[in-house]
Length: 125
Image 1 (cartoon, rainbow, N blue to C red):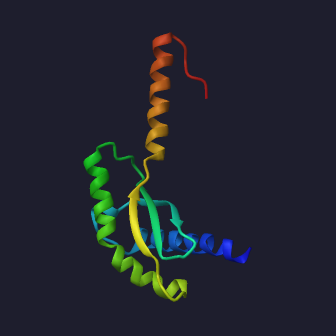
Image 2 (cartoon, rainbow, N blue to C red):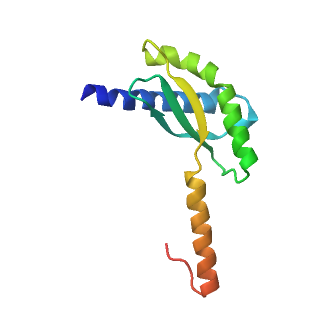
Image 3 (spheres, rainbow, N blue to C red):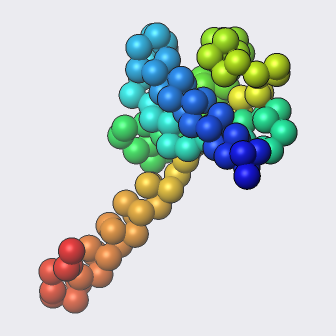
């Protein structure tokens, strides 16, 4: 049971550390205002997939790609800083991916609003 909680604890520590670094230590304008939505880590703790998104949705696929690329460029620096904080033998490799979940939710709400306007009623919330 303790082993199954360990990846969750490590993932949460990674999420908090990276969010703190994004908020206070990085000065790349592409990384300003990024949120770490979740971290997925395997049971062997060798690799972590970090899901990120900006505070303001990036609707342009090129902007999403630029955010991912900028975050992946600073991944080695983040990994070095994370090593001491985790206190484990091998620090997980970090891979950043854009989390488009909220963008999809926003788009569905937009479409429902359009349907409601065309139907002559107001959307209920």
